[in-house]
Image (cartoon, rainbow, N blue to C red):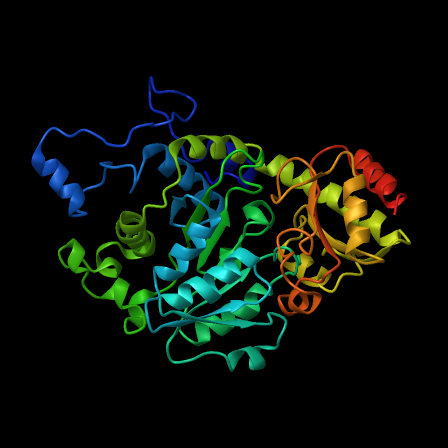
Length: 425
């Protein structure tokens, strides 16, 4: 019987057998014992399944990855130490020096820097595009060496909504996969695989954890992209891997090829594994994800409507508002609600924004986003304070933009806090 997603939040991942702990245990061990040298050798040759070193795989991590995989409707998943690591692995698993990929210019600033600066030093070129361009205009950015397209379901911090089907058509018409960071929507509100996306990433640090206690990331593969049909584009998956005795991942592991390669190659060599302790915390968060996302969305919509009507607020960007330019896309891809994050600008300059935030009593000023507590950030004064107003606009962040992450407190209390702070500017 196929369970509904709310049930999967509780039941998937850890499947205890008779006499085993009902709750997911923390396998706090670096290594695992075997009786013979042959048994251990088969693991290193990828000829047998099992655990031998936590840098590659750990039972706690695999159980939690399995739950996220089930929530997204994928075939295989892997936890990473952070969302940044997940996005790096997701792209680097199929790109190498001399390759090119395309990404939305509206993605999270840390990912933008990873793609545009750090990976550039590795010989991998990224072209950033306006995700709202037409298919014809976007098609001009593809090159013979393009290997992937990357976007975010809901961008951070501008909360723009990606037209998934448009990017699926673009990517697939050029024989490459579409990778989507689904952090803000979570699989509760959007399952990109159902719209044709191929690979999904998450910063599990956000809504999935929900309590701001553990940094982590995850990669989920749909298993639907046919790597062998484009073997010349993806030699890492379709030609022998000499570091594993000539294994060809696409042939030996089928639909699990992508995640198997990411685990056995990238995690082996870079080691950005999520700690079993953090995976345990993440699992606790996942059990209430379906409940929290509903409340986040209800509260965010109430806050957005309040801000939209306030005379001291210049603009509000939240796709749940009927007036929003992304409302129609959000209704299509996320009919149950988008997320609890919205952005808005106040009339006045940076000093006005600073005074407003310093006047808040319930909401806290933090660099984090998307957990149970209401928090906010003014990029121009915090994360992007080294940039001029012109540079901010070039990076897609308005100088007056305030990112508000609405928590699951009582909506009336959140609005009362916003109101009293607005009255002081």
